[in-house]
Image 1: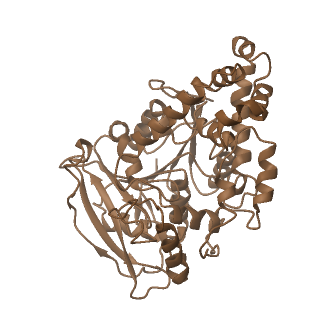
Image 2: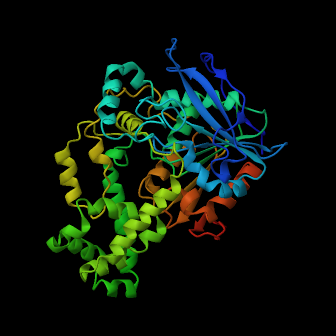
Image 3: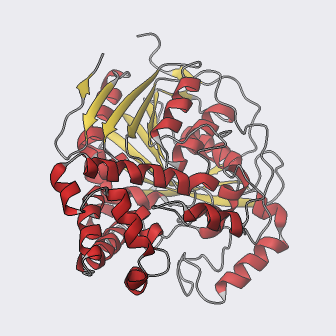
Length: 470
């Protein structure tokens, strides 16, 4: 099996950081799942590569395993812009996946309880809490433009140096694993490339991002990605006689008819393609799409309304914490600076492309106007680490955000640097900890136990174990 742990190559010394010790969290009594947690802050430079007297604070929450933990599992949220609290609803699954491990959940810079880009407007005590409301939009964006150097410091590369400082600063010297989801996988790979921690025994990537240099899977093409997955879902209906019969033929044709029917415009609202795209994220709602189309064609909107309500319920379930709202400024900064292959994209082009889609995403339209200074991609963009610890990738075959084709391309490149094992989850969408825990939990548990994994596939479902493949 080789060495127990992978050791990072030597790096230039980072600017000093100030590490606090863990104490009882102030919100430990607010919700039962937070009761055992411990919290700490770390002070780091605003810009690790050009340090001055400006600093920011990073928040990390630990869910201790006990008096003698097996090690640490660091959990890196997606977005960009999502706080570590996006993991709190899944603590039960994480405990099953990582028994005996301390769960370490940081808020990366700009999110949660860490220093925000707009410290006043995004504060928990502001009018909208972390969400911007009313006049906060104008004052927030004005401050971002007024101090462009501070704004640009909230980059992925600085977040990578933050992550190394956190892992090394709070290390207990034992086995250390790193889990990232969605944008979190991009941040994890950036960390391994430019700021690897001193010790890392393995990496788990849930819903892996495509190569950064991709010109077809970047965020400006998100609607095309969503549409391709949506059409695969409709094709599954076509292959099922009863489903096809319920729509009187092709599901794609039925959906096209629904979208262009003037009698349904008032029912569907302004951007029905976006809502249909959002349905692809949740298997139980995605499964209702043929029935929704059938009802709409018959002039009944009940199933459409029920699906919208169900999506809202799920979102509320996942975001019950005061710091949960994603940071829109951080989403805009990193998305437009790092993950937009078409910086000249216009609203006209977005609208033209959407015309041909059945499913779409609002993201490309958001890239046409940032409203504040962006940063230039640095030398880390498009690079991957020269060597890596063992990596486990878990990916759904119907992922409408990080397509499995993009993950396959990324894996092929990563295998030049180390061992990468892929577990595919049939028909699963994005964020498998949420959408396919029955597949993710046993795969992660084996990886943490044996420091290795085997290539496998799994059928999405709460109790479906992964099965080996040749």
